[in-house]
Image 1 (cartoon, one colour):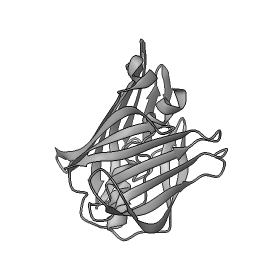
Image 2 (cartoon, rainbow, N blue to C red; image 1 turned 90 degrees about the vertical axis):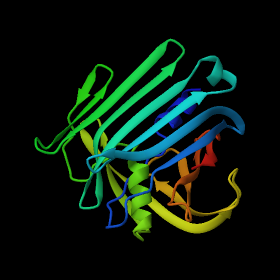
Image 3 (cartoon, helix red, strand yellow; image 1 turned 30 degrees about the horizontal axis):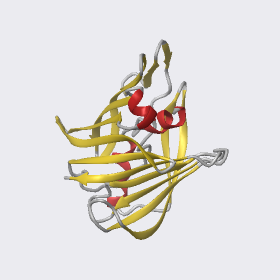
Image 4 (cartoon, rainbow, N blue to C red; image 1 turned 90 degrees about the horizontal axis):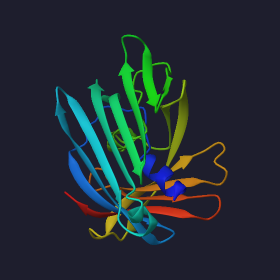
Length: 236
């Protein structure tokens, strides 16, 4: 259960440094989340324009079966991004996780003028340094879609806030594959996160090459062999 919560909290976790390209088109997608092959939750992800040249990414995940449903597990996230010369940057991020009677809230506010970030986790507060193009882990999907549409590939490095620091993440693009999905066969670009020390943990994404690089599947494998698998069920 704890690993499922960790995965849902960190789902869709990428960000690159971007070249110029058209902004990602708005979309709404639904996913089923499986743990070790058994359905556990349903997730909805929506990207839309927020006015003033900004974009908003919202995701909502709700336990639908098994222990996740019994505990009424849910995760809700909202990211607002600004676009600076075609490069996305987080304005704000809000996260709320609820399991039974317990809740956890986190938030991020980006202040370019002051050169710092305000990251909050329950009653703890952190101030990582500001760098142009910084993104929260939830909004990284938007940057990845934009980056791939611009033709970038190979090893992509990112800056993601982690307590009082900015952590460098690396994502490696792989081969194009043909995969079967609930919305039909799709051409998908395989992308993997490269970890210096993940203890055997791996995260792989398949992104729709003909649908604006919307995530079709996210698979996380844990060191002990457990898997969390997020698969698309509808897209519009």
